[in-house]
Amino acid sequence: MIPRYSRPDMVAIWSPETKFRIWYEIEAHACDAMADLGVIPRENAEAVWKAKDVEFDVARIDEIEAVTKHDVIAFLTHLAEHVGSDEARFVHQGMTSSDVLDTCFNVQLTRAADLLIEDVKALLAALKRRALEHKDTVRIGRSHGIHAEPTTMGLTFARFYAEMDRNLDRLERARDEIATGAISGAVGTFANIDPAVEEHVCKQLGLEPEPISTQVIPRDRHAAFFAALGVVASSIENIATEIRHMQRTEVLEGAEFFSMGQKGSSAMPHKKNPVLTENLTGLARMVRSAVIPAMENVALWHERDISHSSVERMIGPDATITLDFALARLTGVIDKMLIFPENMLDNMNKFPGLVMSQRVLLALTQAGVSREDAYTFVQRNALKVWEHRTDFKEELLADADVTTALSPAEIEEKFDLGYHTKHVDTIFARVFKD
Image (cartoon, rainbow, N blue to C red; front, top):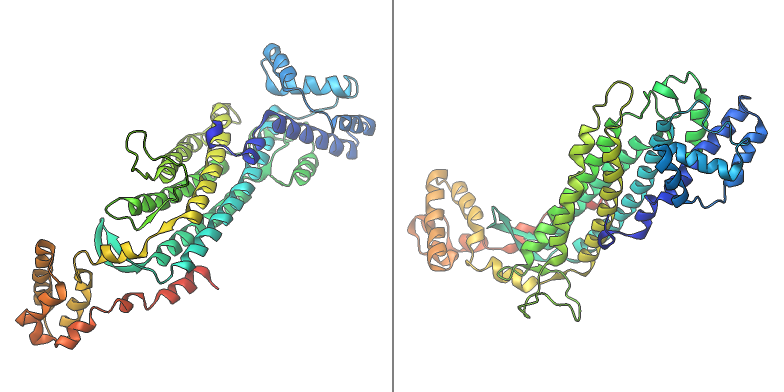
């Protein structure tokens, strides 16, 4: 992943140094378990731990791999250079490369998930704070991009909070599902290695033993993991899209923070563009691009092939690093986001009173007017407001069909904004469960 969209903690998980350290721990813990079983001498297992403080030489491993054309063998050769050839002769006994590769990959995905879970928690805190801050800030709700009925900015933040809270649950489930390891040997039968070795290694690495592996850990687990990342990315785009809409000049109900010295356009000095949320929309596409390849990795030939390998070398780092960056960026946007309540009211009143049409419709039906006639009475007055920017309430008061059914006081009452926000507290209690 390019540095522009990367954060160091997540990048470190995918570094060659981290990978080789995990490989080493897998091999060393396996030797411990085999020594406990009496399969190899205890002194050989202890000798492997002489390398516990070694900084493995990535360049040297690459040099060996250039000859062997096999990454795990290259690593084992380099390990023997530190431990000693005789002392290291039992390393990897009964194991196959996938035992190391797949277990390591799942350790990395589990660690990545831990960071992403913390990212989502930080975003949830920001969304909750802004939701409470603007719980009663009235704005117009829109359907199909058209004014519908009043809502509040707090409810907008609250629904994003609820969505991200579901994503937190998805990430936690994805983490649990991916946290398995396999040390089962060729084709997964444990023919040359005791299942107790797998149990020990997994326990040391914070994993559960894979109930049944072939020569690889089943890739449906990974498909579910990357699918969860894709859903989180889509939710990021959902929030970003709403902010981008709010920042449009003719809307301007909210906007990204514009810092001192920031420039919006190389040509037009007046511009304040929603560059961060537009960027998030693009990053979401990149995270989702990992989902289909992960799904296609599920179907492997027989007990093992490596058609999944090249895919995972790319999508593992790229998807998690990108999502980590995107979540942090969105949290910053929400934290600093500018809200313009007066513009919200101005927008809602652009066609005066029009958004109260449903209340008048329902009042007419409750007064004995058929729904068909009531709809006709309300719509014909609403269309006048659309066409001539007149006041909807005044149009209704001048309509004999309407005033025959409703008194002026009853019509007036239907334009109370508080009617639309009376259940905000109930919704907040459902969402935040406080």
